[in-house]
Image (cartoon, rainbow, N blue to C red; front, side):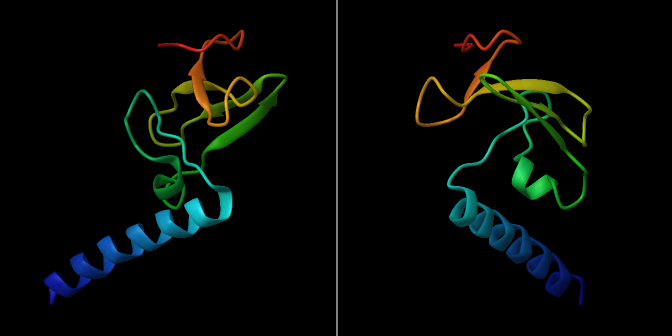
Length: 87
């Protein structure tokens, strides 16, 4: 019986990610814990704050802060607190 629940759990995570990508067009990955925010957002409450260059995200899983530049490129770029992209 547990095989069924494992299968269902994995299928649900995949569907959540697909729906998020269809709705938003992109996803962010926490640089500290390497968790996709769309998937872990179901289990953890992430916080997103607007900045003039994009957004600051506080991961609900590891409580790590990350900054994302949304104006420098067509995709979100991981950046420092001033908006300069990090390589």
